[in-house]
Amino acid sequence: MGLRLSGGKKPIVRPCDGEAFQELLLVMKAQLEEYIAESGTSDVFRACRASVSRLNPRQCKIYSGVLSKHTEDDLLGLGALSEAVEELRSLAGVGPALQARGEGAFPYGLVELMHDAAAAQPRLLLLTEALAENTQGKVFRTSDGHRAKPKGPFRALEKVAFRREGCWSSRALMDLSRDGIEYATLGGIAAGLRFLAAAHLRGELTIVRVKNRVAEPNASGWADVMVNVGLPLACGAEHVAEIQFSLTSMMVARNSLGGHVDYNEIRSAFDLLEYHGQVGTNFSRSGTRLE
View (cartoon, helix red, strand yellow):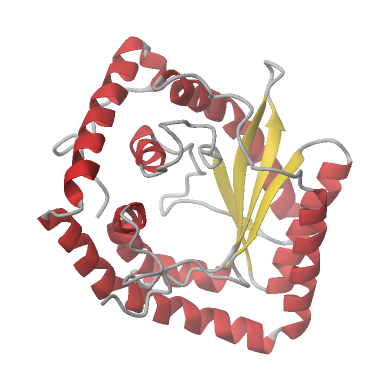
């Protein structure tokens, strides 16, 4: 149930279109502010609650079943993954993880980061391709065989809007440039993480943040390891990108069993419920019930 501010097809306006793109972002920002302000008591909010109640238990059942089989049948791989995660965390910097750039007033900060993401994406794809080749993984591809592209402005703006403390700052967006690798086993993921650690020690990238969602799956039950890495740009700056390390069986569940379609429907619903403080009270973020 993602927001669709354009009333149908998304207008073809890109960061390279300069002022037209900035004007579009300002219009979208105004619409989002109105939407969020009115949503707490509106039919939209009630629809979000209903959507989460209906779909989230289904996702959790699909994903938790897949994950349980791996964690129960591959204790050695699970231990190797946990060790590799801790190694990466020891290499990550301290303090909040933020982009070095993008601090400008909205929409200029977001536009700057989207330009950086476009510049970082080819380097990221080369990194993940080398990583997959050296660790028996497989890079993410769309159903028609294409590699990952940077996150689009519509979802990026949603994420900025729902950060209550961020004042429309874009610096916490660390997945504009993103890619992923899938592995048959947990031990395979561990090998991929160790490859990243070695690249960090060689000075080829910087480990910024690690999320072990195998140990703590997200609200929909999805489990992977998500690593944010800083990649040097030609301009001398560093752009933080995201690499997801997933199990092939989880990807099959997402792509074949409808789980990802469900998640796209309720993703913004989760954001809105969190914004209105429904997490930890009458909203179960574990996905089992919504009172």
